[in-house]
Amino acid sequence: MKLLEQAIREKGTVLPNDVLKVNSFLNHQIDTELMIAIGKEFAHLFAQEGITKVLTIESSGIAPSFMAANELKSPLIFARKKKSLTLQDNVYTSSVYSYTKKETNEITVAKEFLNCNDTVLIIDDFLANGEAALGLASIVEQAGATVVGIGIVIEKSFQPGRNKLLQAGYRVESLARIESLSNGTVTFVTKNHL
Ligand code: G4P
Ligand code: NA
Ligand code: NA
Image (cartoon, rainbow, N blue to C red; front, side):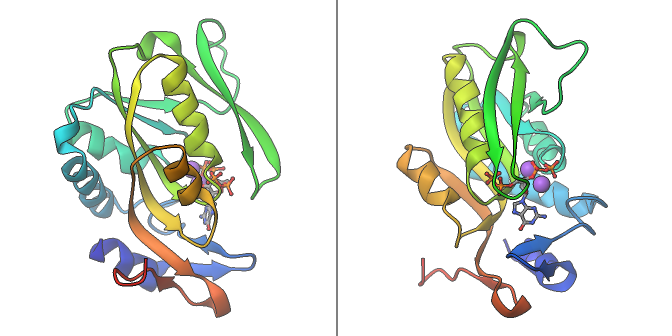
């Protein structure tokens, strides 16, 4: 997606350890026009799938998935990472290990919001190791619902996440695919070099 690649090129900064900082439009301050365009692109890619729920994880997945859900005329569910006072019983949970933060989060979704008739699109902001997306997919499967695909805003294609999700049988659609962050430079995957 050209608009997104342009934002990454112009506003992203490369930090040590292959981390891309995009706090000015995605992870802290949010560019709402860009999020609307991103949501429309996801909705377009998955328009034929009969999606009944969009599922993401707090906090940074919420902005890009909101407009996708709105376009698809489906509710948006965000999995909780922190224990919630009002969300304790009747929940699906999955353990998500973050390689970046070296911590495990128990992510939770209330059973009342997912059932076996649901056709679910999973969306997240970054795909690195794939643990967050696999945790969300596990929750969908615990509900007996169907994962129709995983939409990612920024994929770090040099990390193992994409292949893990493909091997698990999921359709993955990433709006920006980064081949390398070496030498402080963002290089995107080009179509003839997948
Ligand atoms: P995974 O989700 O694919 O398994 O990857 P990982 O454990 O490595 O990622 C942990 C957190 O770091 C996730 O956010 C993920 O979105 C984020 N992340 C991974 N690589 C990058 C990067 O290069 N740049 C940025 N900005 N974030 C990255 P999170 O803990 O779920 O936080 P949030 O959603 O509350 O922001
Ligand atoms: Na994040
Ligand atoms: Na995230």
